[in-house]
Every structure is written in C-alpha cells, then in structure tokens.
Length: 217
Image 1 (cartoon, helix red, strand yellow):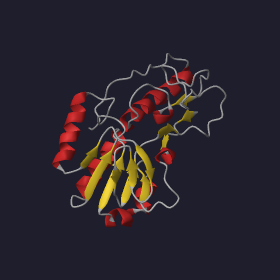
Image 2: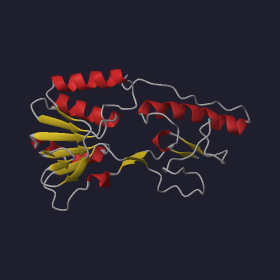
Image 3: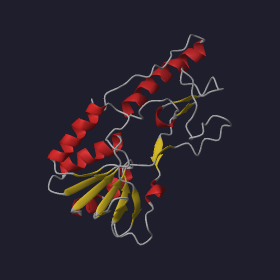
Image 4: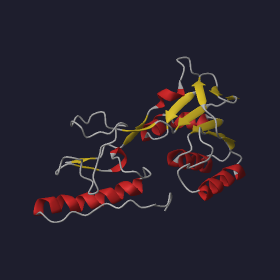
C-alpha cells in the first residue's frame, strides 16, 4: 500500500468573519479557482496571503494573467521562500516590485471582514487567495502510531512507513524534512515503485536521498 494523500490548507487562522464581504479562496484548491473564475475576472484588487512556494507561484501566475489588476501580498515572514537562500527572496521581491505589487512582509492577518485587518493596517481587496495554513492531509489515516506530532506520516530512509514493511508514504503527507514540492513527490514515487518490487523479490531496497532542488524547472 502507498499513502499519498497530500496536503491541505487550513484557513481557520485567518479569522474570516461571518459577515465577510470579500471572496476568500484556497490557493491550493483547483476547484476554488474554477468555481470563482468570474469573481477573479471581475476583481479589481487581489490579495495573496502567504510567501511560500505556493503563494509565490499563485501571485506570479495571477499577475502574469491579469497585468491590469491591482495586487498585494501579505506574509508573516520577513522574506519570500523563507527556507530558501537569500538570493531567492531578493529576486522575487525585485520582480514583484517591478510589477507594482503592494508588498507587506512581517505582517500578521488578524481577521478578514469588510477589509483585511492586519497587525499594521487595514488592506482593501475584492478577492483574497489564501496560501497559508499548510497541513498534511492525514485525518483519514487510522493506522496506530504512524503519525508524528504534526500529523505527518513517519517514514524511514526507504520511504516505508515506520513499523510496516509493506506500507509506503510519499509526497506532502510524509515527514521527510524537505520542501513540499511536486518534483520531490515525483522522486518519491520513483523510489517507491522500485522498492515495492524489491520487497516482493527480497532484494536490497533503494534509499531516498533528500536533495536541494530548484523551485522552478
């Protein structure tokens, strides 16, 4: 068996009010973009919350597709891709500054109602794309003892679930200490495909080696 349930974004931390006047969509959900396509098109100002890989990718894609709209970005951190090298942040911030994106770093979203209330000021918007609250999608996994304190599936160096020879976990739901990127998930799948065959034949398993990979390719 292979567990590959991925990840979800929990938007509860945004404190979205019941009388919220803004459209708030999840940055990770394809369905959100499809269901709210007309609202995205009609919005004059779009605010993207989050400065990780998803937040940067979403903002870049929206600015590229709708260059005449107003955009803003809000991040709790002091730089983009805060786990990446400083050069990545510098490149991204210069790029968005050239595109006239309103940048708010070191800023916490307190609530979303008629406006976006933050730790520094109120920000107006028509539509908000939330790219924060990343969590492993592991609530349906009921195997005793396989989840760590954060809800990730514990795996060994062969991507086997700890304590289970015939169960593997790949992608965002695994507790591998690396960026949760599609290209890493692809690497996991390749290793697990080979290791399943080796478990059956009794051969030596292949170890997954974490490597720093580019954010784009």
